[in-house]
Length: 413
Image 1 (cartoon, rainbow, N blue to C red):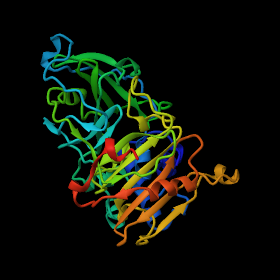
Image 2 (image 1 turned 30 degrees about the vertical axis):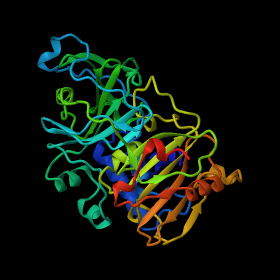
Image 3 (image 1 turned 180 degrees about the vertical axis):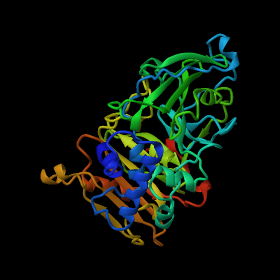
Image 4 (image 1 turned 90 degrees about the vertical axis):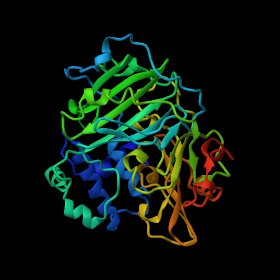
């Protein structure tokens, strides 16, 4: 499913311009309810959570608004990284753990890639919309910003995540209209992002990016999408600097191993107890088991300003692997069955090309589904290849992490 398809799926009935975080999530809930009610056809995206996550794509970073920086008291210190020494670690490895910084709470990272790892960030003053709700719960909460805020005890909504990049991967000079500051002795950059995270729109004070150099040529960046323009502030986000410490390294585990990968495709990113990439962060508490994304050719590992799937066009040709509870799928469980679905892209159908789509393999009891789906903006894998990939995957005991495999090994036949 192409990026614009995912965005359309959750924004087709939204206002044309200003979209708060609540608006984005509300649109996702409506899309989810339509799919659970039978809206989705066989060619629609296979997993509800992926469509919901599509609303959060970040094509490019936005323009800076004249928001004054509020550096920490140590801002006058030398602007070189200070603190603990970070050990060298291979891709698909976790090198830090969750920590608290005032009212913000960084969770343990759940996403890795060839260039970074990502963790959710929660706030005492906000509600985070990264777990599924039933249709009845969604109806009770309502779709408007005011209804959702009332259901959350008056709290504004927040979708925030911390991306810790490998040395040399992040380019602070690439942040559009970024403002350079020094926080706790670390060089940092802050910027305000556009409405709806669409670079064609004006900036929104509630959408912020704060990045800092945590080690020599190694950067971390927190992205904050809030329905409240004032919180978290750049000062709040800057409070995350001193708490980021090395831990591990610990290999990221996935609940499967692959047996076949088409020539030229390389692993790009993973999810542990989550979908791979930002889809996993957008649905971090959905109870999913794991996944991976492959791409061809290999994506760049330097010059980055955002995660791979946050920049439209980065993945030209690729596929996803998802291992989830059957409740995360649009299709009704078919215990012990393998079933493939052709792409929903009208242009592909009209061209007579049986490419794209996805394949599901259900566990014998129907409680777990393995899905392999095509992604990207270029020519997609034929359905026969997707099925071959799926049939070559061995799923571990999803309830016993001791049976899971380090991603670096699991993702190569």
